[in-house]
Image (tube, one colour):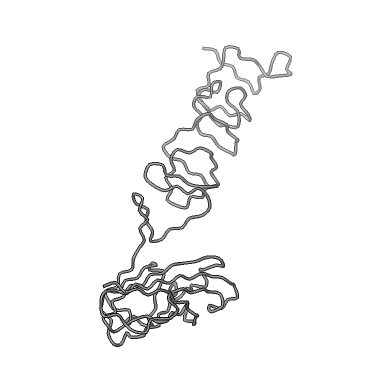
Length: 260
């Protein structure tokens, strides 16, 4: 076996690189500034540089163009942009440019932002969370209805004489006001179901603790409790102005129906 020891190898005229027409076999690590041919970019090692079948130990910040990437796992610290992805399994937040489609079991959002809390789409049904309270509404401290618990509230215990002529306060929660969540041109619908039992009925609503002028179906608020069954109170609230005052900004339309 012959051995060549040299600090530098050049062509015969010492003006360029030597040629290896039959190739070169390197058993150790080959380090180069660039690779030309099938393999481009910066690499510290490649098992077959001429065909670039397997690149290993890539370091630095090269720009690599490949035809196909196959791996068991990958971690990206920046923004991953790809036009055609078959499956995405994300633990964090997924942001789509125009929409998301789940083809086999789920949801299709054509555009914009959709936020769901307590609503379910199931086999063509739109199911909404109902807040079932094993108590009477009149026993709730402050007679508050917190909308963070849903848009439908059912109180399953008979009202008593202490529940007559109830003024119900509508809010998101004890720390969040409805006015902070309802923008100009937005509307919500609320359902409150109670058992009047000849004693309790709702004839007034406030929003965030502030008085509002209700518009009642039929022209007048209820004046007495039904004998039995369930009362269904529906309230449509639409923000029609943006002065910051509940009574000016909110159109509050109410309806009371008894089912027995």
